[in-house]
Image 1 (cartoon, protein in one colour):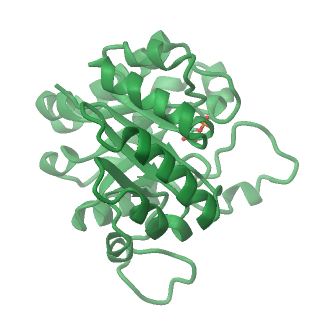
Image 2: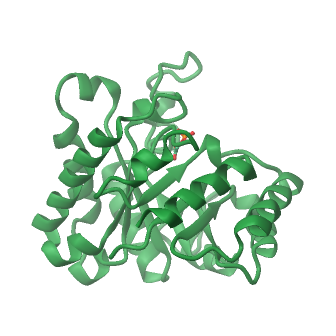
Image 3: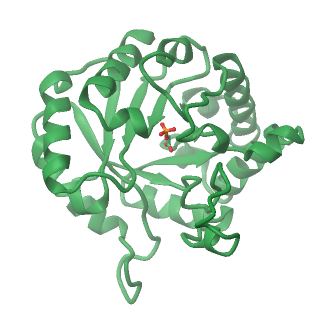
Length: 269
Ligand code: PGA
């Protein structure tokens, strides 16, 4: 039995006032949630604000990124101990926006600038053990570009990303990892991946996991779907056997819609 997770990735949204308001509204409605882990991932500037708003609730706090060193001359970066001191229990690693894999060709992002945040399979593989060594639960994102899907490379791309992310980890460490399948073309586009197809790809990810760390651990690892999850499509996704929850951007920015997603996840398994 895998406990479902509903995680809100607020991305670069919400100043501290807005973050307080949103987190407090979610806490009011779903603070006593059971049967589902709820995680709020505000921008780093709002972590402590959100922590105060979810105090004494069942809602958890996550960061959107981590750097692998503990301290030092790394301007702009945040370490595991820093995230822990803000009350984080989770951290998103290797989101496609940080990997520079954007779904649509945005004129502001030339190919050079698309590398601007710089995450690669190799950096994800360094961030992951850094998170685990501090007791943070990593939510590791993988997913194919539209062009890769059109060329029939989806399964190869996602299993390659999973294998690269987990290289060097013991099975006992992978037990703590959460994965998120986020097809890049479905993120922020309103174009959700068909539930059956998302379930199929997540099955491919679980089979890859089984090869790397064995079937027992693979059966326990939670694998989320992300990409245009909303109240209208969440039930169809959550009823799939392989989908253990959602990593949600847009629909996590309104308390009402995010609470509907939480309810669907909690009722699903
Ligand atoms: P979206 O974003 O729900 O807005 O598509 C999901 C994500 O990027 O994690």
